[in-house]
Length: 472
Image (cartoon, rainbow, N blue to C red; front, side):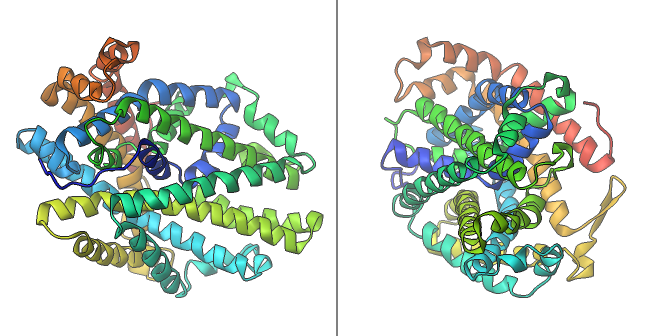
């Protein structure tokens, strides 16, 4: 066990860093739209129950594994798994997954930065044109935006845990919360905004079926960054005296609160500008909503508050989205960076150089998946559809592997690490844990029905994504 490993300096530092990894663009747009289309308040209730009863135990398992091993995923599984091959595979998956997710997330973050730049330049009317996004994704200006985003991310990561990730989180996360609250206050003052609030919050249990329940669990699981190796890595930056249990609860609450609050911005804004909106017509794609729909909303808003004020509102929105994306991306890239440092015994700067080169190269390839390079735009065919490199990365590493990684850590706790050792780890920093109701629930659930649920989700995702069928 390393004696020189960095640690977070405070509980709030970890909470903000972990919340930063969890709060992404899906929280700002995807979650509110999913709730509106799938029962409103009913979806929110189901989502909250999944966070509390399914996701929290998995979150505690990841954080506990990281702190016990004091290593990032690859070495943590190898060390506590006693070097058995099957657990080395689990560690490898938990490392390669965030690396590949970083590629597609980098593409989206660069797009957001480009839109932010254009908005700040006073070009809201240009980005609001229906055909702008199609042109934008195939424009070589992407390279310049990519350089800028890469510099920002590496500036944060090169500072390490305390001076980089923790310090940036303490600045960026409060800024994100403030911008979100300001936008919510502004949006709720618009005419017909309450119609959006009603669609968002009023429960409609008639819409709840198997697919909605599966979607709510998947949204909760993905929203909290589970299965990406992030919380294993961040857990390894905990001190022995830190309270993992309370920190995990606060991260879950913070992420859920941000997602819920975002709904009070997104849906009221849509209904205020387009009063006759049919919720079923809203796109399930966060990308489509952010880059195609929202610029048009802000442009329509200019008829109400003027072009200058609409530009300011749009700038705040894209800055909000950019901060959310950056905080997530920093956490995602930290996982393979930390693993590279441990496995090859190199400095953080050298590891970042290697990661930066590899991720940038793959990002450039993924960014050409929209027609710029035909051979990248059509690299696979499954479920009856041609797929680009970007599509394959999302389908395999974001939609499919995450529940598998969650399943593997549950199995690891149950059959290799053992639940009594897991409970003892969580008790460090929280001496009352083993006498609590939470301990009894986590001990039972993580070794019984949670792995079954995750296995079903994984199997159904494989069937849906790659064979065009579903059994839920």
